[in-house]
Image 1 (spheres, helix red, strand yellow):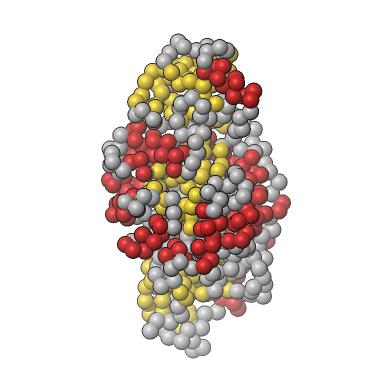
Image 2: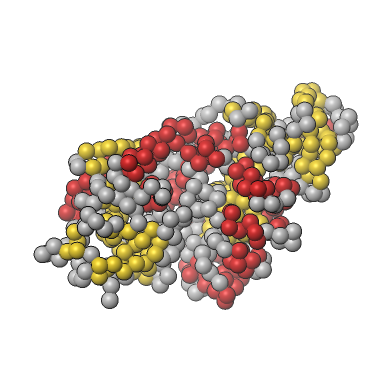
Length: 582
């Protein structure tokens, strides 16, 4: 939204009552997040902006809508999300989220930029321009996420200096290399300065950080953190001037644990975010409307909760043109039935009705995605690459912790054949997991061991493997693992399930190997299908989500033990370790 003389004059003429509003929403209950009150009134809209949110009877409109007592809220703002994790393109995600009352996303295109570099960022921005949803991108700060894996691109501090000259990029996205900041590494400091020197914000990511290390992280000017898992961690960050993002996504459910820590005194430092929210979760549970329901059920005052999804986020991220229903702001308005269930009845974005009764009213136009397709490239790959020779039968095992993305470094005793190679014990829940590099033709294949996945036969392979998104595959035998990986190459990325040499299920994700070019409903149904097959036919643990859980087992910034294409990585030590235990 860019103001010019003509639009500014029209806004002032409408606000002063000299001309009729383009649109007048009458008979609504205005939720005023600035004053903290709810009042009967009407909203006058001039072009894309609010001219007035005032008492009834003051204005006339060229078009008038009777809201019949519905609550008028600012359209909701997600403080941190990865669009790619929905497995939908930005245009399709807009179709899913706007009918739920969401108007803006603060988005980190970290996933696709790690796959496709600046071409990935350019594609996401082109796609966002096609969406009614306002998608505000931050520049990924860690590409690759760490030096301990191979990504599809590298963005240096020098690259950032050029890219951040773009006024539409608001800053650096979650700075995941928190050890780099705490230890004042040259590369990290140069990246921080690339943002600071241009007046850009820096978002955070600091799981488990505390005390002096957290002081160092906050001293760097980190704005916020979405990795709090306890109230104590939340309070520690607020006390250091940081905003805390209360997260509920498809994998990470921290919101309910953190809500008891929200008080009247600290609520203005609290924001709501989803981080990673898949299409099936959106279609079954909602988006920020789900967060609001949970907040109110937990006893939070509805207006406080609404602020956490609107004004707080707008102010934290410098979005001065939205977040409240006041004159001069964007006419991003959600009409809701009540402040308990938060069901959106009508949604207006930039003064235009975008959704009604759960239906997206605008056409879905898609951006050209050819530059980010055909992204799975392997070198010297064969079934033999999954052989796992061991010098000892006592090994480090990645043990899945249900309910999140954390894993445990477990010592286990395993079986070996006469050559010393690992052989799976049918009675034990320890299987092979491998990461196959898919970007730079390095030929890297790293093999480790996984516990808690529950796989009893066959293999599951994905081209989604946070954060560098190489191929990750878990399996009971090398042959099925290889067939699953080869299926991903054929599809251009996605999900493949194999058993006894037969493909049981596939989910193509041809857009960077991360997103579908189909509808959100197709994505939800297909993901449900592959998850069901994984549980019912391959025996994956029914208490975890097969795809979402596996894709996080290569994330080397979340404790304790993960696997990258370069080997087994101990996140607590921030170093590689051998498979064999001492």
